[in-house]
Length: 454
Image (cartoon, rainbow, N blue to C red; front, side):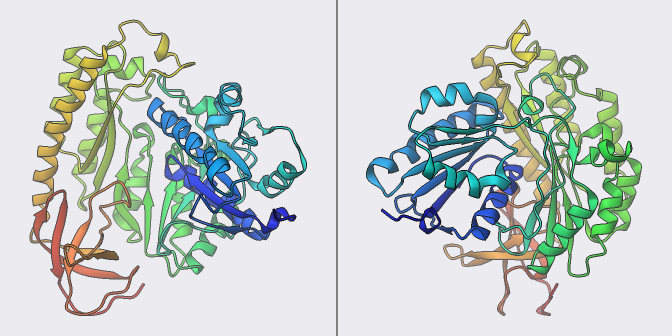
């Protein structure tokens, strides 16, 4: 066995959302600076770190299954230490310590920058180590190692949440909303762009609240304008904009700023006033309709991505039908659905009139079918148009290149397949004329063989 902990190979499993990915990247950065090396093969890893998500039951089950799987490498691989980090230990530490006595270290969300010291401590101590803070920090991520392709990176601009939706555990796991100082973000962004990122994707639990805790007013538009000054940055994309905070100033910036993608991720959750009120959402049905109609009337097309929850406690057939009617009428670009998950410690978990599992599943399947038909209709509208597409890879089976337009976020949306008679470079942008739909995706041909470099 190697004597020096820094000679050990580290394997990392990152679960959950893109916000979690940034936290994982922070750990990788500190470990790399600390002299550690990495492997993607868990059987060869001496130290395995699992960064967990605990947002809903499905995520927790995935985390538990992954911890079980990684602990097996203590028996059949080279693993000496298993470290569990993130939302699960932050919220469920007693349960995890009881269920997984062979885990060596449990780390909450405040201790990612201290990972090197914690790993070294794990090799000196024979006891289980726990490092759980009060979810109040905003770690510096300057010079961060990215795990995405070089041409795009996530920029986490805040952590925590003050909205306290009755179904959500995030405020109890991640703490109060806290914005990362703008100077820190701009340094991080400058480094990411210097390293090759041409698209920065702004993320937080609610990016539209950025700056309210620092100055008493939203500073998202100011941040966007400052980021837009980075010469080699091509796109800025916005994820997780709460509907009540999507301001006219933000929409105007989207119309006038060529670097700001015409794309808004707005988690609406529902449209029935009864359900919205029970969820403790800060907007009603009329407010949602007003916002969507305002966006859809703007001169420049804006792709709207959203998610809806079905089966929330007390959701009646009438409430559900309101949601279906809304989806049919407004035909949003990208729509996702999930069933309500009863989360311990939330207000909704104690509400009467919990919807039976079968009803939830039936409603989910039905509404997905409705939305799929609308999505096909939306995709057909792109036929004959020309989109600027960032090239991201080759599908050898289809013998086609593929990439994304400004209307498509990575990993969650559909893609654009295209042909080109000349070579294309990953991370470069090309004009693609859409000729047809292809399943859930679009297909086209390069409209110009002129090479585009950004």
